[in-house]
Amino acid sequence: MAKLHIVGVGPGSPEYVSPAAHKAVQKAQLVVGAERNLKLFRGEIKGESLTLTAKNVEEGLKYAVGTVKKGKNVALLSTGDPGFSGLLGSMLRRQLTKDVEVNVIPGVSSIQACAAKLCMSWDNAVLFTFHNDPRVEKKRDLAKAVKEGKTVLALPDPNTFTPDEIAAFLLKEGADKKTNVVVCINLTLPNEKIIEASLEEVSEQKFHPLCVMVIKSN
Image (cartoon, rainbow, N blue to C red; front, side, top):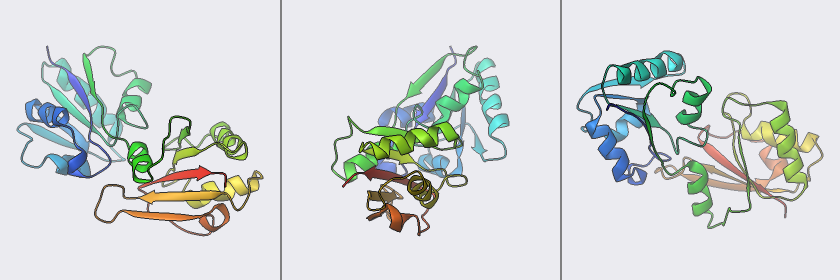
């Protein structure tokens, strides 16, 4: 039976793509994903490919499901892990998975890569993602966690809630301006960069959109 394989492809480096991900792509008759993700499998895609962009996500996801219903295997490439701020959530919110068989292949998320890079245990950390989800309630939950002294791992949204905007919001909500922040940029890539600063200093800077924030009390 044809399946929709929702494939986690890691934080960016080809070294973090799992053998299971390669196998799913090699066997797929359609591979769907952002351009940077498709490039991770250059030479392995034997069937059709479709590049996802901000403008065609809805159409692209429906096309993927429609192709599975026609009896073809599809690999849907999701940056990081599909289950954390990934395409699995996008599919579930649109109720696109109910009529097809789905196989989720986990990947290394940027959150995991960030924790590993900083040699930190994150089993007690509070996780937030603001990718396409800058709800006021979630922002307030973030402020509450920071003011309570919890370690926070957060994915900023590059358009609506950037690291400097997050920092400014937390300061407005009464967080200590000296709170320690680490911003991990382009994790696993050659231009990877780690910036450590106070909450106040972060509020005054601009950062690359591919980043993870770690916020913790001093």
